[in-house]
Image (tube, rainbow, N blue to C red; front, side):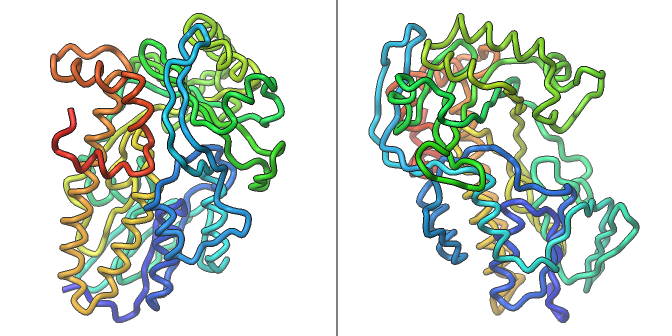
Length: 412
């Protein structure tokens, strides 16, 4: 029986899911503390294609920005390798950045509730309490603990040491540059679009996001791009090793990717991608890397511990619901913990969110079926041919209502 005599909740992970959890639980009257292992998170450059579900949860968290949450676009466009247009698709959408959303949420958390540089190394629980011990030797006691600490979750490792994160066989080259660095003729073709380019092994995409200090002023924004490329685990290890021979298992810092690999990527772009996209890549001084991993949990509850967001389900980024899924997990968990029968509420939370998380992760596998090394089985080959068709890719990748696809049992 889960009770809350102290009404104290420990949240491990200060990213999107952790902050949403803190906001909703504080509103329910819980005493909340957030512990983030990094020194700080707000400088990440990842772009986010938003959906209505994310805007709905932001509204429930009362996170409102007078200047908006991102850059409005009105559709998608795909270029062939010779620069001709392969297809277009109308779709109104707001493109935002991870940093803008994170800072907007962090503003709503009292500074004494949020702790950086606090890496949890172990946790214990009994019938009434849960105890989190950190690398600095301190221990915090609470009624309940939420693991919102991402794909490489230390919380998950503590409660399920056999959990294994899978590398998907491909990675992303990424770039984030000031919009004024893009040639004006190219910028005119991509400024109001989510732009795609196809290449063997994976597609290229890019779009505008907020600039420095979350500035949405025209001329001060940034362009975020990503190119999916195949790579074995052995090659990935090389990519994650810097010039000094240091291997960065969980992701190499932006400025440490070896120059020879950045140059090789640029040379491949000249052979594979449209001239417009090459211009954007060449204007990017320091492209960086993001390996693609996935994880699907069998459970989200472990006694007085719950997993949310990527700690529970890490889906491939083609679905583009990682942020909204974490936000909805946080909202659903806060409602379960605060209901009149929390044990019943928690069971429903786990059942519903596990089913949804699995559907999203599997949909990500479908959308990524043509990325990486070509599949050998006939079923995946069929999916790969279907989902890389321009008219399909343009309409379903990072869609404004992805639930119409990942909840549809009729999909390919």
